[in-house]
Image (cartoon, rainbow, N blue to C red; front, side, top):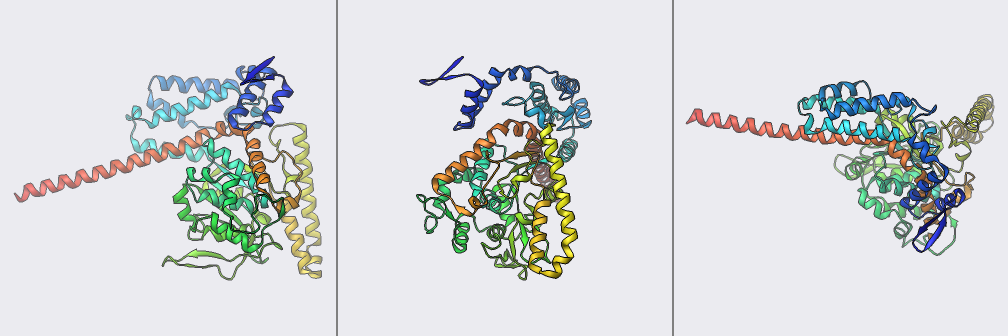
Length: 509
């Protein structure tokens, strides 16, 4: 079987298509090969066939038919009642990772059809076609539905110069309009978070290529597009590079520019302090630049950083002047629990390039395979053993050497962290040389890392699109309806004022 593309012909067998997918230059190209792969392997039939032991297809079909009937009849109150029964992201197990690992492109058509019908039902209730339901009641429903369904967050790990992989992941998600509003980063991930979290979508997309990123450091000696990999740029040059790439904005100001809630992880340079997560809620007046510099300050390579904030006079001043901060990945590479508490997120997309973390990353998590289960059992055993040994040696080490104690405590803290989310985007090679994260890549190497990040994301795009569609739609609907309510409020106030003025004029006339 052959497929002609331009002047060339490609054999449509499984191995050839898999090779073509790995070498694709764009998402559209990858998607085309993935769909052909599903046809050749018969996975497209699996997608069309509703029945499967992997999920409760009968419950999903019944729910889909109910919502469709009520929407088409414009039975708005009954539709609202039916949706009040629950909007679930995992109805009948449809959100399980195993439902997205069988075919190369997408999942069961029934699941995609249900998500589409649910979206149509929500849009219908938000439209003028449902104005027989009070606007305030509808807004209250959508807020409650959004709180119950939850939101997605995007987390970027520590990475050093491997941050260009993160750039590729972000570029893909931005192009597909799938980048979550809530974003976190530590170390190299913090720099990427600050770059995109201080710009509009359009400006961020213009920046996310190796040439533009290298151009930020044109005047720096260590930024040489033609040079091969070398050790990381000196501290003073990293400082200048961050100043060139990250606008001089506070977290609150950056949020107003980008519309995104970014959080940067930092760790204390002194053992007596606790780690922090900086964002527009916890530290609205802290400057992004210093926060990114602190999160990227790898101990022994870059000096600790004192944060800065904008005071009431609009002037820059030290923030917690007695404290210095370092690489956030040492204490909270992926701050999922804190993001959940602050933003109500419950679904995590992770870009993971931390060389130290890669041995702890189970990319098959949730698929139910034997390999995944054995990985989790071994990992849990390793963490328990590490913690037990640290507890046994904690006091002897603290008495013998403060330096040894701090090193052991940091190492155990790194091991105990969770380095995965619901969707994990990782480099093709699971074994990363730590020294590669400590070297300044050439322009060609940076471009390859960006493309690698894009290619690692493409197979997960449809899963992300499907699993986050409702939460993204609810955010849009709430913003639109709140704006409508505010506009109606202003109009009514003007009408009342005009009516009052007319009555007073008539009374005085």
